[in-house]
Image (cartoon, rainbow over all chains, first blue to last red; front, side):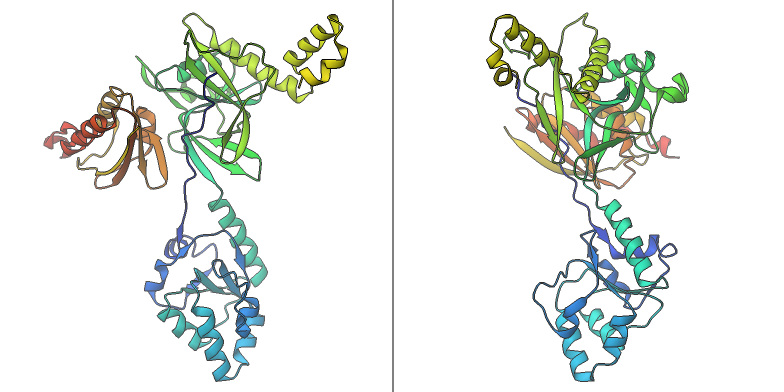
Length: 330
Length: 95
């Protein structure tokens, strides 16, 4: 058996400079800046946002400092009512942590001391005209989308009978040609060459084409072609859930390929398991029809019908080995 | 198996457009090693011309090459050489 495929796409780490957030989304989040410009170098590293909570009474245990902290009216009024001594002590304690960003909502003004200490500790303090809940909800959704795990895989993605088939394999093995053939038969291209994959929720991978260069392919000998212009709107789609990975491999005499299909094989991308089918290539083989069968077989399995297992069940029945059916068909 | 990384800078004025991208894939495909090329948070296979062009790597941008395989050293040398000779871009093209 060939080694199962591991996506070369590694998890791409993302960070987000507060300055970038401030300059690009100033209007959307109605932002202003209290601290000096140099604090904008700070990096947001997590999608999580939270309220400061007990850190404002100097309680440092379990303080989730690596999140964006939102100060609403409650926090600001509380801080204003503290004695100068306490305020000084609590603010110093809080700002000694490496907080990525603090935001004061409802157009409120943070205490001057807070801005002073934040400047010194290089923590940006932003203001927003939005209400606390509204801002928290919007920011959380925005950051979640920004920090969603994503990667790039070299391959092609097509929608075959509604099933997302992702083709992988060595450069030049014929992934694009296979997908071109599928398009010609009425299936749809999502993207060729570079698949941008995002994990949505825990178990779903979605492949997307690059916005600017979508739906082009490179066919050896022809060069770059535009599938949308050539085949029209029915031949393309911009994103698709990835359901089966099809690895095209060179036929090797000594390598044993799966002959029964009894054991389902898997591969993992961004922590999500996907069924993997390895298809050996020999000249004259019609990979397009095989692709359609892979898609249909997947749909059958979803409906609870496993062709290989069913075949084996009948065989065992015929041989009078009914008692082994469950054991041998799993 | 050796795995090497190196940073290269785009020194030709027009950036990695179709012609230099074609030169690059012609070079990378001569080698068995896996060659990846990365700009910011996007990493693509350096043997695929579309992928390289999608990087939209403009003049002055920095790319990270990761080469792994038996011929990694030769491959990396050949690729770096291409960047250094600015993909043979002619000065008049810059006008």
